[in-house]
Image (cartoon, rainbow, N blue to C red; front, side, top):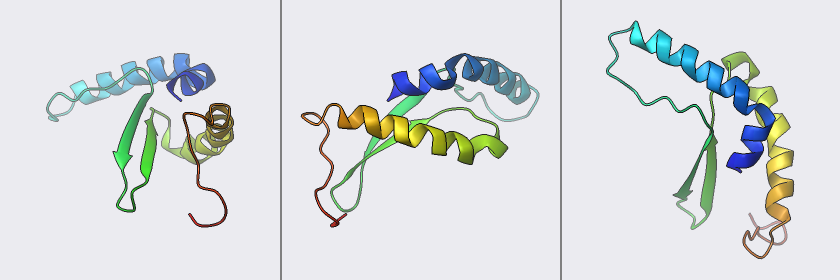
Length: 93
């Protein structure tokens, strides 16, 4: 998942990370960790699902279109490894 997001806009994210760090340095906010690369986080859902969250820096106005562009790519890559990634069968989700 991380590789796919990096391939899609990894170089842009590095630049955005630098800009974001610079902006934060001018504020009274304590030092925050700003990652220059996408980050994948797994979290257990309340219904025994495992949520995969991909965090990346993107301009707020582009967030929806970037997510729309990434989701089909991520799902296709996950489906290629059906022995490692199991999606529910049928409509019970």
